[in-house]
Length: 183
Ligand SMILES: CC(C)(COP(=O)(O)OP(=O)(O)OC[C@H]1O[C@@H](n2cnc3c(N)ncnc32)[C@H](O)[C@@H]1OP(=O)(O)O)[C@@H](O)C(=O)NCCC(=O)NCCS
Image (cartoon, protein in one colour):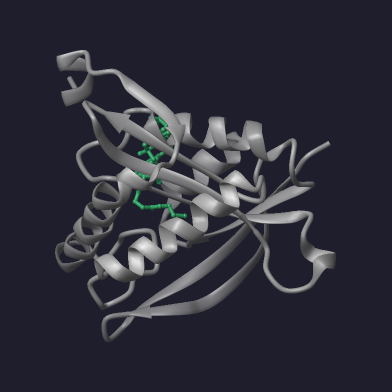
């Protein structure tokens, strides 16, 4: 039985706050470490450790966008710890693309496959429906679990970019592009 279910911990999904910074940084650093033993981690990663300064700036910008109603950033809190986040941010560039937004999601190792990703996506899409006409995302070709999850929410594949990433010296990773159009 999972750690969460065993301890009957409550999962709270809420909007991101400034005080989540350290947990969010920790989640990212953990995944950077995870990749050393498991190259099949489903997100493109920087090889540099995030700094408090850069992450504070990133989070302040995101919270500002959330307050202005431009972006959505939901976190999952378990036992006072933020263990996952899903953000939906508008596509940059031309104003003619502003009806579209991009979705990103990460759940901390040890808390996956417990329904947290589903809760985060569900809550984020509910808000996104009121703001955008469509949401898109990129997912690695080998990340079948995540693709299955997105399909369950109605996302459809619209393209594949072969070998979009090369991890380490030789792991070629295809980029699968998916979108969900709201009615
Ligand atoms: C992908 C991710 C966000 C999913 O979050 P999660 O909390 O594990 O998802 P859930 O527990 O809600 O899983 C729901 C469904 O997704 C699918 N799924 C998710 N992760 C899976 C995995 N590793 N293997 C197989 N199926 C998986 C399953 O269909 C699962 O349903 P099931 O439990 O009935 O089989 C999470 O595993 C994660 O952060 N992974 C590492 C980073 C990543 O891949 N991010 C996605 C970038 S596109």
